Length: 70
Image (cartoon, rainbow, N blue to C red; front, top):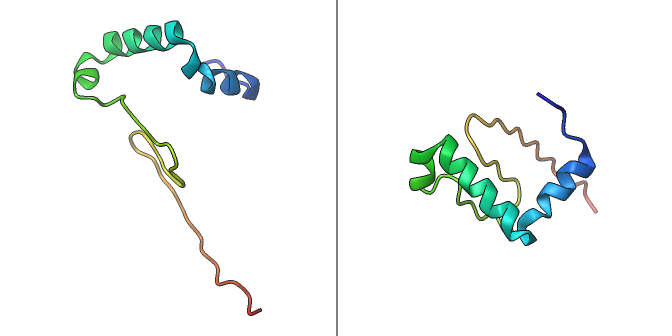
């Protein structure tokens, strides 16, 4: 698998304005996982979310520290 460089990631994240690219990606996902597509698995809206993981088998570790006394 080819490593994705950060400029590529940035370009892909900005792809929502490219209607033909979004439609092509949706068609691809429908071919790769028709059942998941029908079930809405790839319809994700994480606007305004923080500390969110999307997908299967994710692991997240949070460490919260008490702020120092002011």
